[in-house]
Amino acid sequence: MSACTRFTRLVWKSFLANKGHDVQCFPNLVIHRAIPGELDVSLKIEPYNLNRVETVHGGLILSMTDTLGSLALATKGSYMTGVSVDIGTSFLKPAGRVGDILKARATVTGLGKTLAFTRVDFTNENGDLVAYGNHTKFVGKTAGHPRNVKFSDDGETVIEGELQDID
Image (cartoon, rainbow, N blue to C red; front, side, top):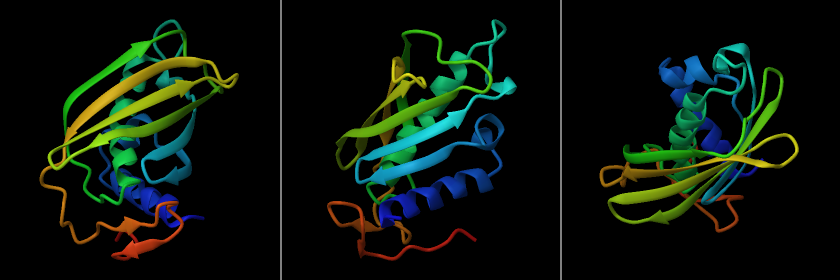
């Protein structure tokens, strides 16, 4: 497993350890691949992920846009991923029902000294785009965190800092 994938999974583990919103909404999120600036995940849809017409609730997609935007920033080596300043989601078609697998790719589209921009594309099991989101984060205070790392261009190795497991 690449260093980037391992680090991103460690950051996700810290989100779950917080026992907040993420662990309530999508504790079964699976991180499949992470390279610097890009993340691929999947989520098996559970009954608690549905709206009253028994399809994926839009709030789940918006919450995932938030969290996956943050995890996309983790693929760039940031342990602390900033705070949201703007977020939005567009829904194209129903995203699934109980038992379906929802897939997502989160991409860092811009990263400056104070702001970061991400996009998350959601696809169904057939590969159809069902929704997409954009997430802007303030990252001005994330630099210099002792758990930050720097990856090789391909994300295979850490070239600055070291991977530390979450306590």
